[in-house]
Image (cartoon, rainbow over all chains, first blue to last red; front, side, top):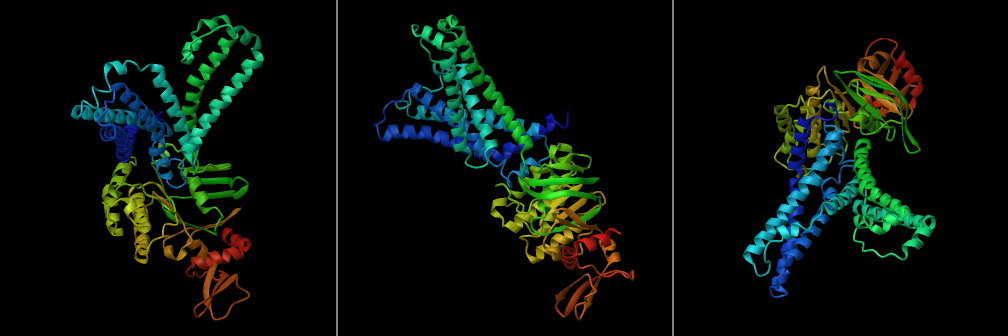
Amino acid sequence: MKDNFSFKRYQMLLTKELKERSSIILKLAGIMSLVIFGIWLTSILITGGKEISPLFRFGMMSTLLVVAMIIAPFNLYKSYNHPKKGIDFALLPASVCEKYLSMLTIVVIITPLVIILSLVLTDIFLSLITPSVFPGFAFNANNLGKIDISSIYEIFILQWGFIFGNFLFKKSKVTKSIFTAIGIYLVLGLILASTVKVVYAEEINQMASFSVQINSLDDLLNSPVLEKVPAMRLVMYSIYAITYFIIPVGSLSGTFLKMKNQQY
Amino acid sequence: MFKIENLNFSYSKHEVLKDINLNLECGKIYGLLGQNGVGKTTLLKIMSGLLKPKSGACTILGYNPFKREPGFLQELFFIPEDFVGPDIEVNKYAALRGAFYPNYDGFKFSKLLTDFEVDGRSKFTKLSFGQQKKAIIAFALATNTKLVLMDEPSNGLDIPSKSQLRRIISQAATDESCIIISTHQVRDLENLIDPIIILDTNDVLVNASIEEISSKLKFEFRDTPDKEALYSEPTLGGYLTVYRNESGIESKVNIETLFNAVLINKKTIKQILNK
């Protein structure tokens, strides 16, 4: 067991990784904060100090956080599968499990927290010095209350997919990951659409008379319409399972296997 | 301790190593020689767990290298030919990684850096290729691992550094450790590497100590080439000639000449050395 995982070694590895990669994390956080600063500056210089609402800033910061979370693995661990640069990390005396967990800890937990902290501090600072431009704080109880767990999980699903892309592709990692993600969702959509159209043609005709407001998969699954059409409910559950279970589990386990079997 | 049995490896359809068998022991500095493309680097990478053999077995200190278990990695250090250091200070690099090696000696590292005249406060990215290489060699030897694999360590080093390298490696070698040096620059490491392994695409042509080689082959200077010789090559002032050693009198082994002789008389010299 100690060969697979030792907490002491994991701690040592995490410390080493943080000491070596902290500058990249801080740089990423700095760039995201600069965007907020840029919005503030634009408002002062171009629109004459027009007020930017906390809700807009909150949305902006959330988008920046998602972007940072997606690009973080490419910035922090781009060399892992590099035939020359990757050797150093691969031969470091720690197990694949420890390397995998330290990588996830940094990319999934620490980096987003540092970026959130940096964004919050920037927003607080700017709203304190120019309350007329940045009235109130973006991170307030009202805005935070609008976040739902499934949205956060969806962001993580996206990030885990990109982490896998970083370990899977050797060149043009970002582009290939984006196109693969689009490709997977297109193929899945097409398969499901065709299945529904061919296999459940009768049910679809039944549904033609129904109307439903759909904002998310949850809405659709809980919709009373689907209760009347069990076959469609099955299809929707399949989409749900693929999106919320198979893709994230596949991304995380794929990353682990790629790290374990990477050859140089 | 280090055993390779019927090892096969290929890059897609290009076969590099075929049915390779090798037994290596601690307390020695092996010189791994071979023509370009015979698989010296590939063999070192398989031994360090960076590549997975297609078939056959490679057992290092009882471990399967490709599993990259911490217990194995703590006893191995591989220095690639073109080492690329990260963007951090040499001393910081060593301090952060040294903690993972149970026998790491920070004192030894500082001393080796001083011997190599490398400033440990510099970032790798600010050092020349040769200096980066000296820094990583110093760190490798300070880890005191049981197996050190060096791929062309003298490449990129200036003339004084090459003699420093020879001295430092010979001082660092212990009875518990095994150092394998793959090189084309035989002259850089002459008087250091012993035994000699000469690798061919499908075979290990030589795996013998200098003593064994000199007891079976005789190296002589001649004014003219000798048709009876196994091999002879022109040098300044005559011909360096290789014969079977039938007299039993030992001569100084010239590794470069041995290498050339083996390439020309693969079968014959293999038979002589395996007798």
